[in-house]
Amino acid sequence: MIRAVMVMNTQGKPRLAKFYDSVPVDKQQELIRSVFGVLCSRAENVSNFVEADSIFGPDSRLVYKHYATLYFVLVFDSSENELAMLDLIQVLVETLDKCFKNVCELDLVFNYSKIHTILDEIFFGGQVLETSSTEVMKAVEEISKLESASNSINLVPKSVSGWRGR
Image (cartoon, rainbow, N blue to C red; front, side):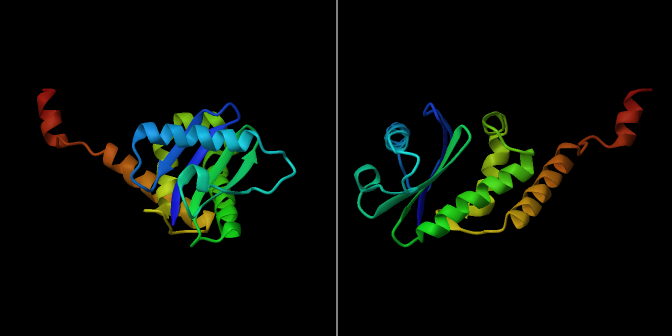
């Protein structure tokens, strides 16, 4: 099971954090700081896989990928394959790139709801739903169409609104 998805910048500021276990906010912040402490102390030439027992408890692993100024992190238990989790980070980044045309840190900050929609299409309750960035983009585009259609619904019939103008 996936326990958490995190994206943080190289200064340690979380840009996205989604926990699939029930974790209080203050504990989430402590965990994010601990993860950043581990990531920034690692050399560039070491593995992207980390045993996270000391941070998240027994049977916890962490995989990360560093892109430009962002760390993408997945925390999971031993039932998940480490290489598959690394591939899921790649799927997430590819999907974000397709959605935002070369994603950057500001895209994550200013498009919070769209980012969570993408996450919800890939993961649900700590389980992997979709591994194809193309399929995720189709679903996200469909959701965006539905949202824009619901925003454009006029609750007052045109005949009544035209009548008021007379």
